[in-house]
Amino acid sequence: MLVALGLDATSEAVYRSMLAHPGDGFAALAERLDLAEESVREALDRLSDLSLLRPSHERNGELRAVSPEIGMELLMARQQSELAAQQMRIEASRVAAAELIADYADLRPAVRRVEVEQLTGLDAIRDRLAALTRAVRSEVMAFAPDGAQTEENMKASRPLNDDLLRRGVRMRTVYLDSLRNNAPTVLHANWLAERGGQVRTAPTLPTRMIITDRTTAVIPVSSEDSAAGAVVLTGHGTLAALCALFECVWSGAQPLGEILVRDARGLSTQETAAVQLLAGGLTDEAIAKRLGVSTRTARRLATELMERLGARSRFEAGVRAVQQGWLPGAD
Image (cartoon, rainbow, N blue to C red; front, side, top):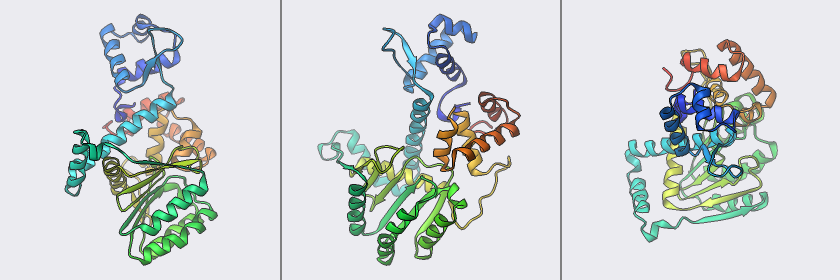
């Protein structure tokens, strides 16, 4: 069920069993799952490699499974990193960035130090973004994963955006697919497009992010509260990876003016993402946040998908999604 995130079926079964029965030892796991001890040992090694197991603070010398919320974020972060690396390999325009990363790997002093600036509070974040925007020369790339934008945020951003576009700065923004159902946000996105900005949407986004001139990135320190604080990153290797991540997501996103089509299985991009999140064990609240919709909408979406799969539980939905080829790599 989590093959797309790098977890084979046996390792997933062991992980789920350890979550459900944290007191089980090695022998109990093998017996409960009807697996050979060697298979359990290999699964534990794989889970440890993926950081899904950690030493127990309560039982000395034993391992415990990390929570699904943390575990799935770790797996998805790992997958995103691999996608970014793949994008850098296949794009000829990333040759220079690859060389910089290689220099970083060789621990050259000029590249080894990654510069990080901490910003605390919404005022500090807005002031820094305003300064970066005024200094932009050629390009701005942004992820906006919070779904519908507030009127206040959209109004505050327009003077700066208008100045950039008038100066011929290339602006590319990826919103969530869910914004297509929010009229004020669509109007704002169309306002950007009419002035030369490029807008696309994707079913999910990894984080809120703004990159200017491929040299500076601003990312929130907390995905739960983007106004609490942020970091400004300027390290060459870090920026190369973040730019590659943006290009990878951008290439798979759909222009706002295009109608989203369903795939061969009759699933929309949002439904496909919801199936993956559902199979990953995320709660309705977590799914809602990732998709940029209300918890009520996420619950309705999950219920409809389970009905289409003929599943009575989320675990069964994940199994059936794999069997029916609804998940990436399941065909």
